[in-house]
Image: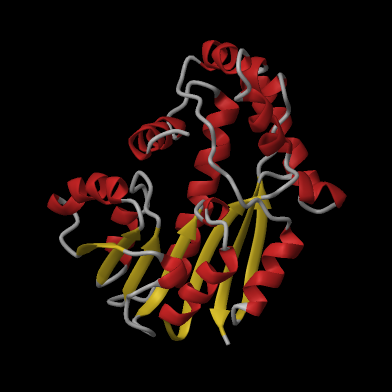
Length: 251
């Protein structure tokens, strides 16, 4: 299993990857999340990010909110985020387990949880924790991979002994085990959101991964993936797209 420091280094690499498809998959997700935050963040409000990772969203949240709290169960991620304090003065770092959170109830206007829930075995408890922390009228912005997306299935194969070295040579970038222990279908994710007390206001899916074409197709392969994504999003293929996104309100 990769260490938190290795995962942070990987996350930072993905947004500037030399592979066009890999870069697009991650930057498209980042851009959708940022646009959602811009639509829903409350000026002067209090925002929580659950699992800040490499911290890509913290500077954005700082410009949209009065105070930003980054919470994680792993101290290594918080130490990495602490480097931002010089440029993000309204940032507070808290070690906390969202499944049994010690943060005050109803204390945030917005909660961001992107690419975290798939690392938590008891996602239902995590969602209940997030619902507890939201103020009345507060907003949750969440993203997580889809269980049966080709990218997630390929990732399980890519880390097999003997194959991972080949994959690293192809990408010439870090390739690590994902640590995804709780991949969900959209149906399961939506059910858990409702059971935790959320009403889904927006949903979106993105990310076509075509094995071998992604690795060797370059810019042409990327253009093909982008065309297929637009078609898949409106049809039966939407369950094969990589990422599912939600904006939800507490009820």
